[in-house]
Amino acid sequence: MEEVHLQTAPADFRFPSTNQTRHCFTRYIEFHRCLAAKGEESGDCEKFAKYYRSLCPVEWIEKWNEQRENGTFPGGLFQLSLACAQVPEELKQGPTSGFMTRERESWHRI
Amino acid sequence: MIVLEWLFLTIAPCDAAEPWQLGSQDAATPIMQGVMDLHHDIFFFLILILVFVSRILVRALWHFHYKKNPIPQRIVHGTTIEILRTIFPSIIPMFIAIPSFVLLYSMDEVVVDPAITIKAIGHQWYRTYEYSDYNSSDEESLTFDSYTIPEDDPELGQSRLLEVDNRVVVPAKTNLRIIVTPADVPHSWAVPSSGVKCDAVPGRSNQTSISVQREGVYYGQCSEIRGTNHASIVVEAVPRKDYGSRVSNQLIPQTNQTGEA
Ligand SMILES: [Cu+2]
Image 1 (cartoon, protein in one colour):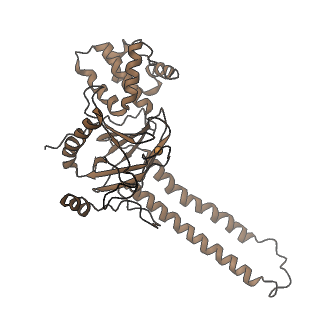
Image 2 (image 1 turned 135 degrees about the vertical axis):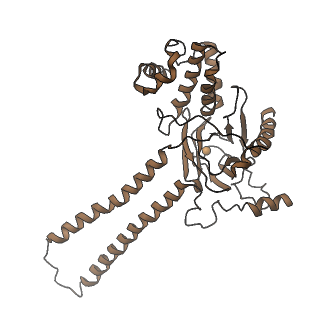
Image 3 (image 1 turned 90 degrees about the vertical axis):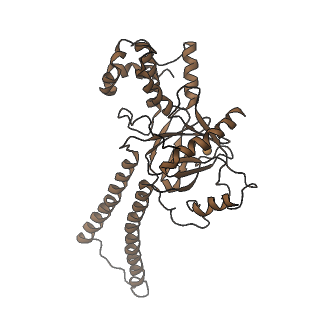
């Protein structure tokens, strides 16, 4: 059996604390925003999917998938699809950028 | 029998609590080593203070006994002693606080990117572990349940109420991210030799980073016992080169069993 290559979601400086709830949620939203902006064909979004699958409990992902199908998902997924083209660069500005503020507001609705 | 011998002679189950144990279990991570060092550092000051205070107390009782000293002293001031007994007690907490905070923040800090993420999910009646780094869809996932072996059922050599049916297999000398969360009520995830005790709070996922430095089997217990049969936590650290085969050969069949049942 060959040695498996070990790789997982990297440590994210936006979420330096023990509480990683929003790390998982943010990665989930990033994936779906990326899909909305780039479409499923471009393979760019897969890495976000890998990240959120590593970080989120399966139960949460199932719940959010269900909520998205019913249109009751609390995070903003599509409003900012224009900004999505530059997701990684945008997010490098950290939690102060407008991108994250919008998301923080929606977080309260959970 | 050969299997038993192989299990218990090559991997000695010594990283578990033993009867009448006073000290910590052997450290398996740098954090636990730091915890033990801090404990010893603090004990230095503790014993220093204990000896000094006892000496003053005994001397006072001895010299100022009413039979020896029928007329009480009238001294109410002593500038030198007052300065000394103010300065020293305020310096000692600093010697304790500085290493303590250094350790506290080093526990919190994730300096290097972890190599694998394991989700430890507490339930009232069992624990679930998810290895999802290689999932290619939301439906598929490498998940297994871990039950405490009941009190009347352990095999020869197994630790009573510590052993589980499915252990958490991790690679040794690798940075691990453990995501701790419960599915129902608050729980926790604690392994003494790893220096980890992480609360599991419903609706929140907590992260703790460990890097197990030696191969072995590490026993821990939930610190929020809400339910039954879910307390035991057993981490088995295997050499990194064996990790892939352990996970793909052992965990995947188990996943299928529990998944379909
Ligand atoms: Cu518990």
